[in-house]
Image (cartoon, rainbow, N blue to C red):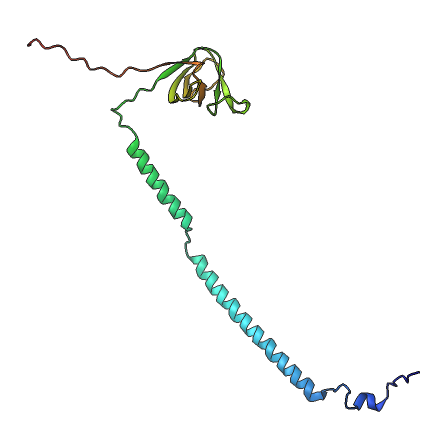
Length: 184
């Protein structure tokens, strides 16, 4: 059976392969290096905090406008200018076709029959201004704005109505009749 080392064994503690202790000078050097590293970290941390507070203080005093806000403002101004240019003058009057509902029918959000796109129901004798027509589909659809209503719809409602529900009267352009001249 192998011999167990005794804690007071001289060779184990002081032999050539024994763990070396540094002593008081080793402890002093370790403490000094650790203290210097800690001091450097504290100094650099304070410098960083001061630089951040100076930058944050400057940032708080500035008026910051995001780039998207200025671009949005420019686009809005340009669109408003185009709208003002495109609006007809008060002297020019464009007459839109007017339609009368002949039967009960649905006002829809899209020009096709689907259960989810019903906005309301037209009653006979409801009056609507035709804003757009889709002649390429069968049955034809009109995008309308309700101007006078007998039923449950509110005046000003917009949507699509089938041509089977609406009888459209196309307005005649204002004719300029010239009196015949007496001279041949």
